[in-house]
Length: 168
Image (cartoon, rainbow, N blue to C red; front, side, top):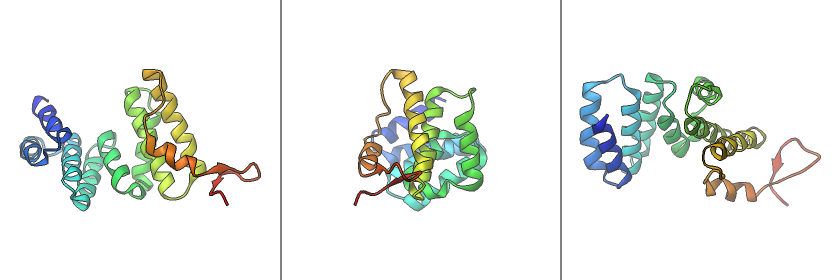
């Protein structure tokens, strides 16, 4: 646990090389731990190795279907990879009241980004709304996703349609 936190600190400090050696030891000790694989995916992402990070995040999810950090890495690199069984697992995590509210908010955000990447804005919007609602319940403020607010500002709802469209 302590070594995983140290590795995460190195990742947050943008020192992926230092984090990688610790994470490799953690995975050697417990190769089935999806959380350690998600740490490696974050480390690879910070190092600019996007394909490797994507593969590692998918591996983390295959080992632990409720591994929120792995879903977040996927949503940052390739949100379209969150589909099929992966999307179903993530939706189950988001709907689970057994999970921490922060995990549920992140899950809803990852689902929304997956829908948004496919242009399914009418499906993405309720997920962003739910992520904000859960986040607001935690801290009393909106989700700090400025990238979302910028993207949504480019769209307006047409009352004659069921979903958003680009302004003319």
